[in-house]
Image (cartoon, rainbow, N blue to C red; front, side, top):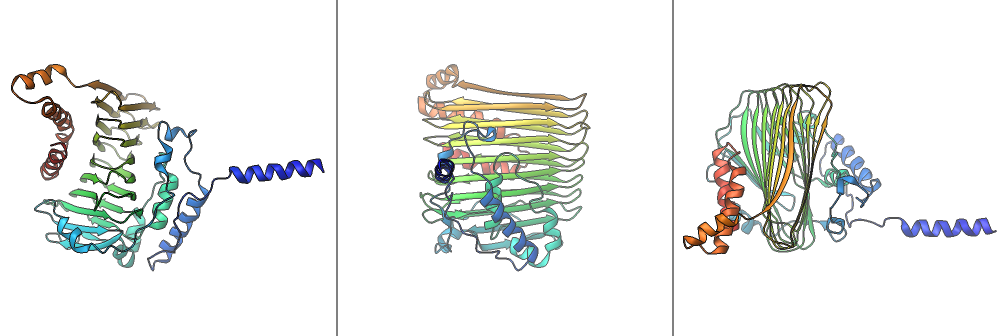
Length: 440
């Protein structure tokens, strides 16, 4: 009897300690008629339910405020009624080859102005309907290995639409492609996805923008796959202007083949809790991956960035430069790993994180790392934190510039060193204007 009683107590305690539902999401089945995609989404939903929530003991979530990563209040976004307003405000670059506008996970507008006929610039729904074999060859080929596998499975299960861009070999686009993702509605959740495939010796630039229509609590669980074939070149920039109440997950997988080059820049101008994971694989000789990030963190904002520079082939180069400027009670977290696999000889890999502390109450956590399994490599990594240069500020004040404006100018110059790494002039000019408007 005593044993039975103790067993009953153990069962009751175990049930009490079991995690409760972590969200209000339901799986309604795939929106696609593709049998493969239906099965894929069902499997992803089951994985999401089985995978545990991140905990304080998870090294991949070290320093993160797990309460801010909660999904409890959010529900799938309903169809927007603000179509006219969203289209009116989706005005970014003046001269583009194509433009997508999504809102609450629905395609509102696709404008193709100047693309060769063989280029695919279509929605994911159309890709599944007309080019399924091509799409499934590249879609989410790699697991999220930087801590957010549960959220990646939720993304895959709930995915309704997104952008698919495919450039066959030998295509060079002189004009960029612009993609807009909007969210509106209290506690609405969206799951944007972008898949970009750059064929051999092809070249394209893409600007992706994530925007909240209003200041309200929302969730974004976004992912992109960036695939660069031999000799291809991709310039990709993402700008998020979420509301100050938004919880956002941005997950990226980049793969670069022989002599290919991928440059990716993130500009974070909003959000309450923003978690980014950037996983770059250098698969071929002389592949290049440039990873850039600009983060003016303010208020109670938390920006959590995890990166992986995975050198699989020899003679490849990766270069990471992240700049954070922290005001008020803002927090930033950076955890990055450069891994050089056994056969990746003569690797060049760099990783630099710089934190500009504008407040005594701000907090910056930086954890760069190296794992080298090959000989004859050159790898450097580091993180620095410092305050505003008082001599520079005094110099400006002596010329009539108020201290507040002088501080902003110093921050602007701090970020410009990252923007200068973006070689594509159309993207760089657009980001410079957005940053200027944000700071001033």
